[in-house]
Image 1 (cartoon, rainbow, N blue to C red):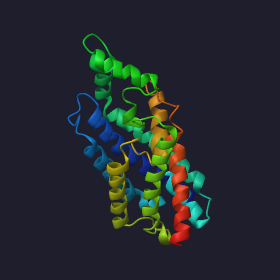
Image 2 (cartoon, rainbow, N blue to C red):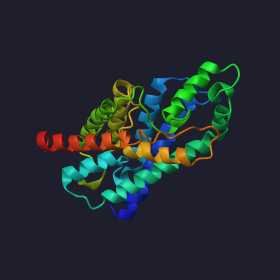
Image 3 (cartoon, rainbow, N blue to C red):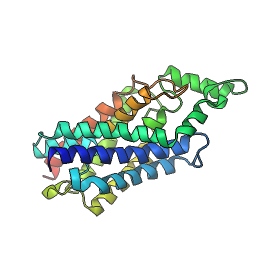
Image 4 (cartoon, one colour):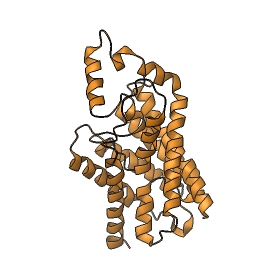
Length: 264
């Protein structure tokens, strides 16, 4: 795979991942969406199908890492660091593009949601407004969850540990499939297995932090949230932003170490 193939494949694949994954979050969250309040099952399966679509589409180009933690783990496993910056650049750019596409697809819903008194406060909406104020005091605006993750309980070491644990499960599942074996990336069955692993992580480990398990998936859309001209959007919660970056990278490194000791 050439550097250009890797960059293009990771950009396209991560854009698809975030478009469909962020899209299901928007569908469940935003007012005037037909899927509003569809619940956690919709979100977890939506992200799983997003992974399936993205991996299947771009595996022939780049091997479909779509996640800096996966790229890091493969570099540790194989000892080949040459293309790590190219992978990471494509992944972050793709995540930003995907988040911008979610905004375009749900433009009217974002505006309706963020100008609604029940969401941003106003007469007759004291309880909801109080919750919105509390969230913004913590640095998270009312639609940040469409773009990035956040904890239900802010305990830094636990939040990091949750991301580490979830990422170890994901990356071990990827490594033990023989990702990029013979340079061909994941096959069809591997894409399906990875998608189901992501669904499992979401159902079992997603409750505490929203299971980023992917630094680009969280950082790229968070940057887009900060830049978009959304009314009453609130903060981007930069005080938490390091957790879904550091936690998955640690998890990827640990998974690679486990693989080299137990499976290599």
